[in-house]
Length: 464
Image (cartoon, rainbow, N blue to C red; front, top):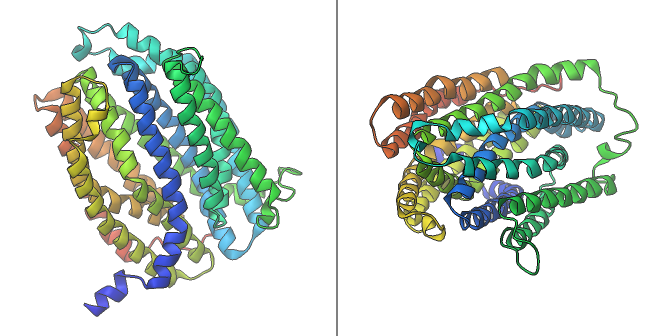
């Protein structure tokens, strides 16, 4: 028993360090997702069609967000290890890679949404289950929402590049503060612009989009000004744009390491979108219920998301410093803590599941379906928490090709295929389809456990 505790349970200093790191991330993500829930409720107050329209467009933008995340992640792996090594010039060049990639990705994303956004939205609406519904109404809401949201893509990209770099340097508080201010602005503007309070026009879904864009610009200015005003704390920010020089060898290394990550996030997000599109073939009620489920799930998963960042930072810094055994030890303790914590959180989701949908102005059928979705999500949460931490562990050592196989290829071969077969070619109720898909990650967990135990991922990639 004592050996087990020493291997998987940290001491007070370990948990003090972990809590200091993740609390700002949990607060930031928690407030973000709580406000997202309130936003969802506000838009839901306009009816099922507006809420479904916003949900569809946000699902499509989710693909862009994860593509951006994946593209930045390759440079972030190097950034964390450069910081652990004390190489600030390396951090500066890694940041430049992020910005150049971000500008290109944002331009491509905007172009795709302008030319093909409507066609992509129709994939969720134009099906047999919605043959008795006037999908034009929902589609028009979606188009109006998208036109405004496009203006927020650039500031969103810049914030991701800066915030990830600040976190690599151990500062999780500043990005949190910027995010909290932005979220508060978003919430207030949503209340004012969606429903037309305090003399403002009632703008509906367009108001929700305007509020989001304004909030993103505010976060953009806060993060950028803070980073460049604290060059003593962040020496790599000094003279950052005097040159765009990046060594050829670093570009090559980041591309080799980062390309699988970018492709992983792209195809993973596309896979997630396809899965939701498969669910949507069962009707607009399913789209609305799944939107409620996903929004609530994200709120309860803030610790899981924060732990992924913790694994990247704490394990990555030790790998960069050459402490391979220390990295393995920290990783074991992080994953064990994460798994146990999410058994408790999963039980909490199951308990509150009947109450969450009651805050939405939707049909009783949608509420009932959302309740059952949440119960399934809560029961499967510990599995997803373990797999999530395993993904960031493998990634932290630069094993991005393995990450791609583990995450993206698995999703398309198992999860996407399973959802398509169940939803399109069987008469199983949608709840049964969803439960089978959610619990299919047990296979992924069984793959992850021996991979983590082997320690093959624990590599220093900045001292070659």
